[in-house]
Length: 141
Image 1: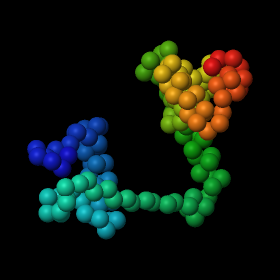
Image 2: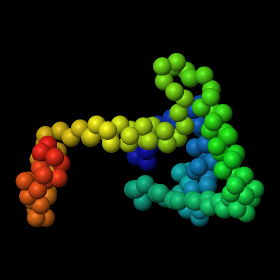
Image 3: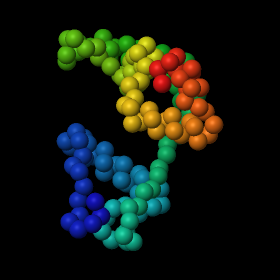
């Protein structure tokens, strides 16, 4: 991004993604006291990574109970929308992760043979034998 030719990936979301990228750069760059990517700022051959955080205490605004009711109602409304794919439900942030966790809890996690061997070798280095791992995973080692 900072090397010749200068550039980066285009933001997603068209004009909204572009506007979000601009606001993010100004918050994390200028408002945080760090430089932005504008060419007048020195790079010293590296990437500059500033940080800006916004902390919000809902109790100081409309109240936690109201916020919870509002979020629950909003999520319920969004999930009641007709799905783009009739065979798949409408999901909100966190749903894919919860679904994956449930599936992995039921079916386990697929680990290729090379990675599994590396895990077993690492266990041996800290005193956990392959036989012990085999016992822990129910004979699947």
